[in-house]
Amino acid sequence: MTNNIDLADPNELRAALAAGLSQMYADEVPKYGHLVDATERVNASVDDDRDAGRLGTERHGAVRVATFDELAQLAQLFGLFGMQAVGFYDLRTSGTPIPVVSTAFRPIDRADMESSPFRMFTSTLVADDERFFAPAVTAELGKRAQQRQLFSDEIAALVAESVAAGGVAAQVASRFVELAIDVFRLNDEPIEADWYAQLDSVSPVASDIAAAAGTHLNHLTPRVADIVALHALMEDEGVTMIDRIQGPPAWDGPDVLLRQTSFRALDEERTFLDADGQQRTDVVRVRFGEVEQRGIALTPEGRAKVDDAMAAGADAADESERLNRIRHALNSGLPSTIEELVAQGYAFGRYSLKSGPIVERTPIEVLMADGVLKVEPITYEDFLPASAAGIFASNLAHGGAAVADDSARLGDADRLRQAVGTLHDPYALYAAEQQGSLAALGR
Image (cartoon, rainbow, N blue to C red; front, side, top):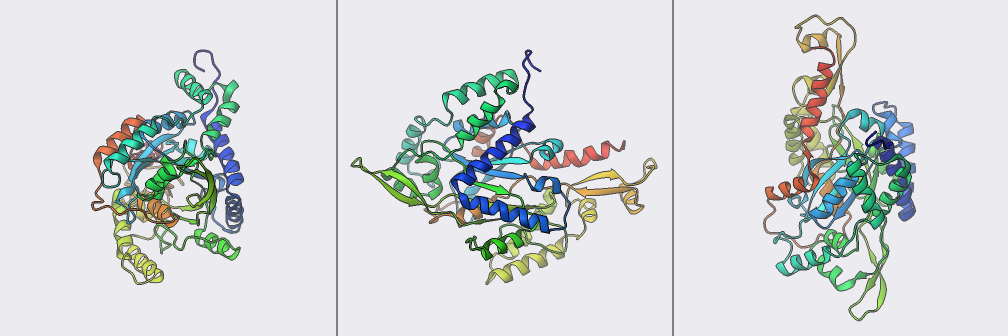
């Protein structure tokens, strides 16, 4: 309670937001409803109780904005849903460079994530990157961005009031969620055809972001227990999927990090406005339905081993050889049990007491070997820039213009951090969770 105002629980708000966005996206993209149904059928058939309570409701969404000022607006909105910015992803450094930098808004407390597992992967157009945009285009982007309005007057006022009050007033919670969902609803205003084409020649992502009047949900992602089975099921049921599952494949050890795939972006009719003032319809292909399978969070050392393994398959002749090379490198470079991965510093885990008591100053390895302690994997809650870019690129009508230099720009990380207020380091969050589990044992 703040200033005698009853505040809504952010976990409940976030659950309502996720459910509302899922319903909205199923209405806008019916094939997404098919994906959710197939995911539920696969999950019901897999004997895996890790995070089982989350599988049915877990989602992550993706949106894109035109400026860091717009990102700052979304940071305030998501903050009221208990979602904070975690991680910095530069998608300009991928095999198919995309002119955005990204972060993910999500809960940072384990209990909050378990209560309502929802994230929003949020990308910002880097409109002043001259490797993509000519100065005249950058100037036009800036001018047009000033005319955009992400928030209605009503939601803007509620966000300001709620930030000042330290939370959303309970009596307006339902309306607040309703208005927040509308922020991400597809806008049906006509798109200026020449401006769209100019941006599209740079990148279809740029035209999707900056030619529209506001933002919209680009994709929504349920979580599945077996992504290979899901991919095959969707294909069997007549849905065209992208041809690759992004991320580290199954190997002799536990699932690591994140695997993602999607059905191909759909042909959708939009209204365009030609230079002569005439309206016409045309087809765009940018929105899709994604699905993910999450594994154990890795330390920087473990992540480096996986990155090396993924690189080992880069020049393979075909997909089968690529996967075999990656699996061989993973099996050669990492231990295959959760206990060994955590003990050797390759992965993060939560320790708990299996039997007791604990003899003071006994090394953790001995307690583990004696069956006194057990370790459970900490789920990877974040994203992989190569996978995100790969999903984006696989669903684009074309790749856009190439850039001569794909090196990252550290200054853009600073701009993103300034826009979101606090940018959390995912490794620090996982390490704190692991250390906290030990502290809870009184060690």
